[in-house]
Length: 315
Image (cartoon, rainbow, N blue to C red):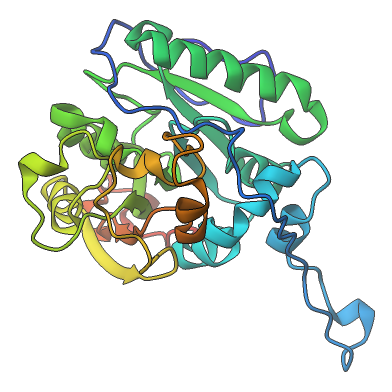
């Protein structure tokens, strides 16, 4: 278990160690981004007095000057405001983000929860693979370079073979963005660990590259695309209930038959200059957006105490 050398707002019991198998997915290069910058801003409501118009905290964070122009440009494809609203994310929660990669959502979630909530970044132990080690080092450096935004951020390293993200029932929300395709045979253990760390009534939010309906499983290997029904099965097998599906991150232009799978498209553009304009015109991959809940019935109450009374989930 390792923890970033940052000020902690909350002590979690973290567990992880041990080697894991190499992750096979190609990295999504942060340097290859659409050129146009889309900087979202909160729309003013002129009819209400200023004191009656508290700023939308997500909109404020999205417009933050610590976010790079390249990352802001991806708002047009990743729809962070709509996605986080769909998952019920808000200040005051304890939120665990699984394998944050380059920290695209970290730039949003950590400042959103700073001083009012807890952001935990969960990433595989360095020994999991050379790819994991490189990504982890970049992520640590990112947090160290932004102390004002990330001072309260926490981290947990997990063993992909035996994942553990903290104390049972300690999180309000677990989020994973475009990671399921990396987990292979370890996916059931990951979903079981999500269920364990969430409070009863807690939310699991999943965004993943969506395979074409009826696609052949063999043909999907190495493509990054995953059938929606497979993700739902993994979650429900782990004890979750599907609450709702959203088309927030859908892209009907994505034909899902690219030479290098999802990495053919932006932001990776794995073919470099080959048909670059074509793939830029398609945009980022078509993605499922799924909201699951850990049933309240999983709550274990102690007899003879006030803990027998159910407590509403914070989200």
